[in-house]
Amino acid sequence: MNTQSNALPKSPIASREIAPAAFSFARLMYWSVRRELEEYRFIYLAPLVVAAIALFSFTLSIIAGIWEQSLRLDPRHHLKSPFDMAAGLLMLTGILVSVFYCLDALHGERRDRSILFWKSLPVSDLTTVLSKASIPLVIFPLLTFAISLAMQWMMLLVGSAVLLVSGQSIARLWTNLSAFQMPLLLLYHLLTAHALWPAPVYCWLLLVSGWARRAPFLWAVLPLVVISGIENLAFHTWHFASLVGSRFIGNTSTITSTPDVFPTDPMTHITPGHFLATPGLWIGLAVAAAFLAAAVRLRRYQGPI
Amino acid sequence: MTVIEARGLRKTFGTTVALDGIDLRVEEGRILGLIGPNGAGKTTALNAILGLIPYQGELRVLGRDPWTERDRLMRDVCFIADVAVLPRWIKVSQLLDYVAGIHPRFDRAKAEGFLAKTTIRRASKVRELSKGMVTQLHLALVMAIDARLLVLDEPTLGLDILYRKQFYDSLLNDYFDRSRTIVVTTHQVEEIQNVLTDVMFIDRGRIVLTCSMEEFESRYLEVMVNPVQVSAARALKPMHERQALGRSILLFDLKLNHADRQQLAALGDVRTPGIADLFVAVMSNQAGPAQGVAQ
Image (cartoon, rainbow over all chains, first blue to last red; front, side, top):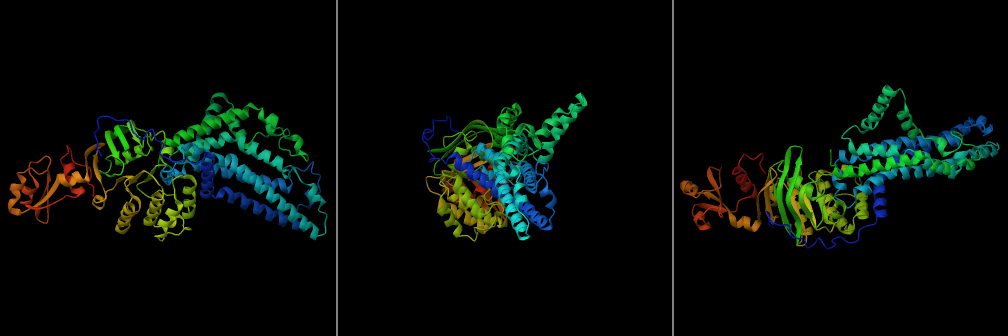
């Protein structure tokens, strides 16, 4: 060893490839996502518990005959079938879980210093951030889809069994199949209203969780409140607040032609062309991509807190 | 082959200068000990080498720029940071699966073999393990990775002496060979004196001494002087003097002093000084008082 060397000679190893063939991006993504699911087990446990509770209450209610009245109603006028309610409950769970996941995803690893371990492995910051972003944007909608479908089929089977045993017609149950019973519509709704449309919100939360030293929730919400407040004081308008709100609640009118109503024949109402042509969608995705790029860059500089 | 090569490496945090333009060159097959008081810049230097912080100056690790190529560099570099940083929620089996999943140079069977020598169970979570066991686990992972450079930043901090001894024994017996390079910082200097091939003292962001252990042994000499010969010994201008058990212990730099080994041996018992003692001597000869003592 020799310090204070006068010149930095050309390193003989610079030209040589030292590492063997690296693992593919897909493989690194798979293991990174899997790691997230192992760390944040509530991602799949929460919807499973909610689905189990929904199934249990449905079974109780159908035994008690609570749905009797509503099942007899014309589904055209009846908006919320038990299936829709259960699916809606799962979606609400999904939003809550995604928000809490995003706020912790890049914060927890710095808080418990494990970022030093993750950074000691050959996984880039880009892969890490993308794998974390994929949880609310890809994994969760697909997970909710699978659990919703399974839950609804179980509800249908349990409901039919109860009705058969009690000697009633099961036709009412089956004619009540509603919008969310249609897997394609459910998937479309989850991917559009719960992933693509609110993408900037989730990416913003990820960015804040990678930036804030503490209280990421506060830092995520505070700027939005302040901007809305200033706008209201200056112009007496609520444009920013309604913009953020529409991202969160979802702008259903651009996703399906009849907002908030899921009619019996939903396939005719899916309007992907209309949705994809919405400038808001692309602006939102661009903003989301910018937030993610910032989060990737930020993680390079971040160490334990 | 040069593993680490730095020139004018500099890092500031606000107005604090953590690294004041150091030059550094570490060849393959060396075990370098980076010794210095707290806040001397050891961890900053290691963080720069590992691509964890941006820096000024030139730095090449295995021919790569660590800051821009961290993920590629980490195929060939392993590190254990100062305290246990393994995620506490993870199960041992999940950890093995994960590292096997993402690290092209990880040999799972080897890691299992190291773990078999410990009492660590696959089903345990890291949070259920004692600190010593977490370090064993981390070491098992790292030793199963066929890396070229291993960076250890206070790897045995807070461990009892049995774990500490075992840690370095495993490292030397089961891991180290001439194609690997290890850089280690520790405050338990005397424990690694026989492990190191090179030593480097760093203080206030500057390198104050660097030498190989062969040079260390031939260059520095400690004399426990016979009481009657103390003034004669002092006349030879030792670089440092301390008292122990009522006797004076004088430390000589044979390169600077004109005294030779035989001359000093006549004055009392001579021996190679401990790194810690030399460190204290070097630090007290610096312009100001050292902020702490490596011990």
